[in-house]
Structure formats: C-alpha cells, structure tokens
Image (tube, rainbow, N blue to C red; front, side):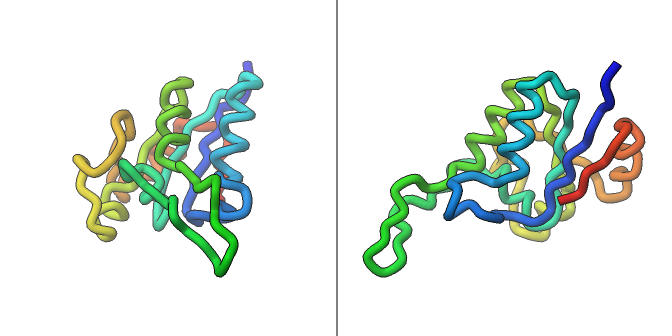
Length: 128
C-alpha cells in the first residue's frame, strides 16, 4: 500500500505568470495521475486558490500581454474531480475576506486548531 501524502500549499501564485499554473498544483495533478494518494490543504495566502471566478486575463507588462493567464480555481476544481480531498484553513480565508459562498464547490473548511488532526490522517506532509 502506498503512502498518503498531504500537500500543504501556503505560498501562493508562485510562477503563475511564467508557467500559467502553480507548480505544486501541477505536480499534484501529475502525481494523482500516476496513482498517488493525495490531499491538499490550502492555508495562508493560498486559500485564495479556492476563490471562484479568478480572472487574470488582460494582464500585460509593457507590450507583453499574458495570453495564457492562470486559472487556479479551475485547477483546484479539477483536483477535486480527480478525487483529491481539498481543504482550507477557515480562519485564513476569513482574514482575507473570503466567505464559504465565495469558494469553489467541494473545498472543505478546517479550523486552525484542527490542522494537526488533518496531518495525522497522512503518512507524509509536504509543506510548500
């Protein structure tokens, strides 16, 4: 039996302009596709990944226009569709003005005091 791995994503929007996706979200998709048993916990600024309807289109730097903007909320929705449990720290979302109704369907809130219990459900915790 394989190990259960929890991906804790806290650093948000890393490389999203150059690569059009978050590296950790991308590798989680790839690992799940290879049969890994994964979960994701969004915390800190990365709780924004679960906000519905993000739109970075129209972004430009001088004459350079971003033609492939990141769609992180859609990537998180796809992870959930693949059977990856995605949760977020409720207090982190509230600190950023996000209400449960602002978030994509399928993400589960976790109170900050219960994060240790989430960790216990996994064999490995990778913090990004």
